[in-house]
Amino acid sequence: SDLAVTRSYLGSTINFSVPSNAFTVDTNLDFYQLNTLDVAKQKIGDSPNYVVDALISWVDVNGRVLDADPTRPILVTIQNTSIKANADVYIVIGGNVVKLSPHSDAALQADGATVVSVVDGTAVIKVIRDPQLVVKNITYTVTYNTTNTASGNAPTDSTEYLGDSSATVLGNVGAPILANPGYTFAGWCTVAINVGEACTGTSYAAGSSLPI
Image (tube, rainbow, N blue to C red):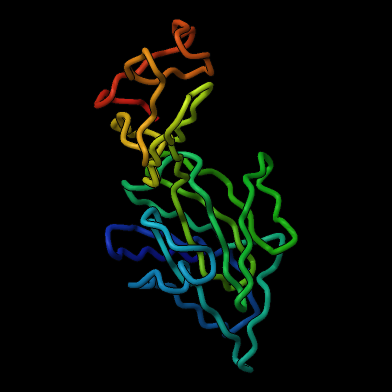
């Protein structure tokens, strides 16, 4: 019969559904969430937006780590309120990192895994190998550009923003500040315009909130 295992760690609830006959007889399975993100940050890149770092492990009676039956993959459901829709899912196997792509038919990719779905609060993945699973929210950055400015530099915002957050719009705080004789800095426009032209996009004053 199918085996269902649920583990709760560090704000996540992870359910592993293992179909009957997915493995050879006397295969031992273990599932746990890593309490650090060191491997994820080392392999994928440093970021404050990792949500889950979990490991699935199995070994048969002869000490071998064999793939599960590809027609009977393990279904991994990860629930965490911090997961955002369309978050990135990675697998780490033997030091190799693969970013999984969602497949509408949930077909396994060449690396033996696939993303079934990622919605707010839940990621569902199918696997046939013993991977480390990493979920990382997609982030966005805000870039300030200038056109026809006599001198100065646009400010830089290095913050990584989540998709449902907002950024506080920076003022004329580049080094050195932007300057054009006869003009006073009033804010930013979402489309490129020349000095003195009216904003034909959406204008944002310094200190205002920019939806991401």
